[in-house]
Length: 267
View 1 (cartoon, rainbow, N blue to C red):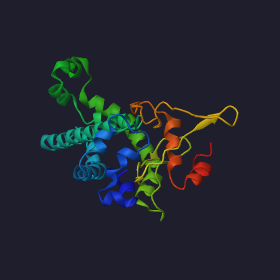
View 2 (view 1 turned 90 degrees about the vertical axis):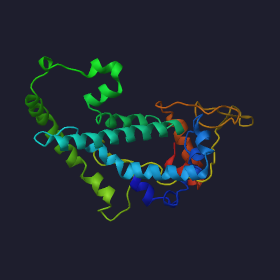
View 3 (view 1 turned 135 degrees about the vertical axis):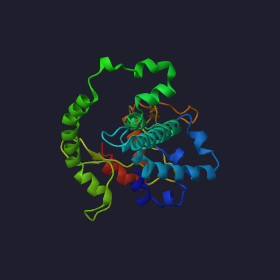
View 4 (view 1 turned 180 degrees about the horizontal axis):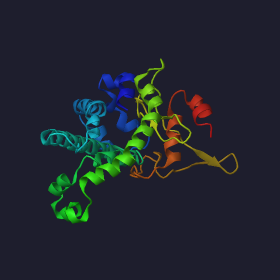
């Protein structure tokens, strides 16, 4: 997502995308206007945070919280950085979640960050629920047995995911000589995919309006559950639920409108 931004629209490198994104996004929420009317200097700094998290601190969540056979100091350092990365990732997603309706995207992205929080950390930040993260030695097998058992499962899975990730990484690094493609699957079961949202951001909003008629003479406008329409209606807040039709109609507002209607949204 970070790479598609800096390789796509120049507004990300010029730090202006968020000057209009909160208005032109697919399904603005009831809180989107708060973000839209923030000072533009703040919005530009928010672009910096966006790119910093997606390009750099996201790697922190891959650090292990415990590595067998290494010095305690190394484990502690790796665990601390992973915790920081998890907090940044989860906090960043909560911020995006509050700024609009992006279905279950933000909720799903928070889940990997939760793996950064070991039991000791969770006990310290959630003392009232400490009993949920405490286990006696009698209740668990020996750590060596756990590690051996996990390796039997994790290593083949890691190798298989690595194999499926080859075209994804090739696309990410543009090794095949073509531009990075976003939101694409490379295997028939769509197990490992490439993703990148808002590589470009529209500066103006063109709202498609759907009307129906019983006789071809009198037409009435359809109101959708979450798509902007009636300007007197408060914008909805539906995430993590996804109104797919409401979302897809948004693409028809892209110029050239007729091309999107006939090609991408031919339904």
